[in-house]
Image (tube, rainbow, N blue to C red; front, top):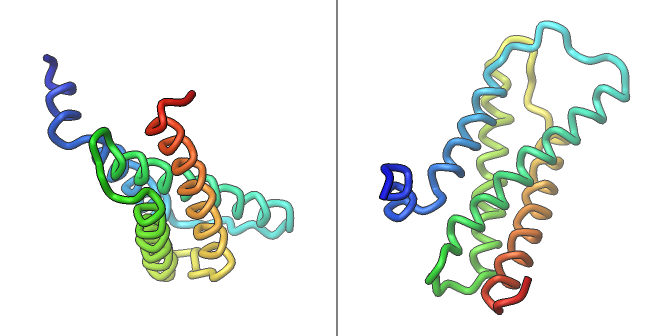
Length: 134
């Protein structure tokens, strides 16, 4: 068994969740010296927020529901959404300390929507796998 295989057995999928959260925090740490002024650029920013948090929530649900987990999947999804929403809020507050960036409640709303859709999608996939379907 390789080192990666041993790590996956021991820690499951959580390292992927932590790595993705670190990526989000890292991207939030980049100063924005040229803020967008075109409305289409602002909308694209919301899609990026949605996508980043969609993946974060999907990874977290998959990590929490690894093989043999007994927790109700709906409860896991609710906890993941709440945790990711708090992480998104903290991230927006943190951005207020970065030059050229500011905390934006609309960005946070995009984070939360991405989280909800990511958790729901992962819940459907994991639920299907639990039932033995494809």
